[in-house]
Length: 159
Image 1: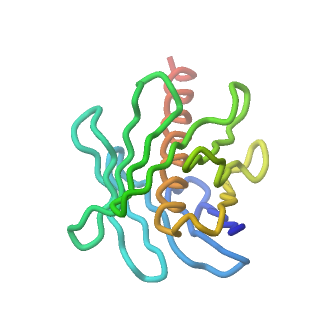
Image 2: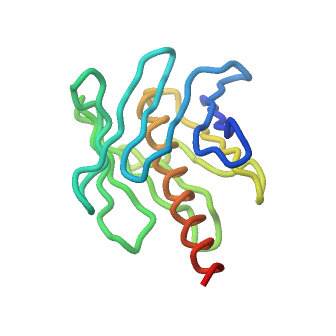
Image 3: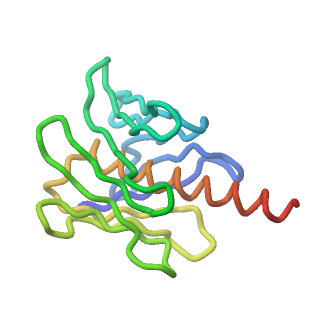
């Protein structure tokens, strides 16, 4: 198993530093609503979304690395297609949990969860067969959904 930990760089920041074994290995930037970036070992990947309900697309130097489709606007689930032909499903682990499970080839190959109930620090425990860019993309998607949930809660409390 590989363990990646994402920690926000500041109190209100939606940019996260990614650590593996206490060593920094990358950065996740969720600064924009439909776009962002993932930096892993100095390599920059871009995340964009095609249209309002289109797939999230992960690219590196203009080539598609992976894409993630959200089949329903109401569910916490993504179908990931990897350019090499692999496919994964990222799904919320339960109704009353913030954890997500990553499935590949019919098996659970990872879990992404908060470090603690009120913490934005997030941990991804991934099978060693999951490529680091795919694991970081799944982590970016989970953090993006949490950001949207936080924005919705803030807007509801303000009205």
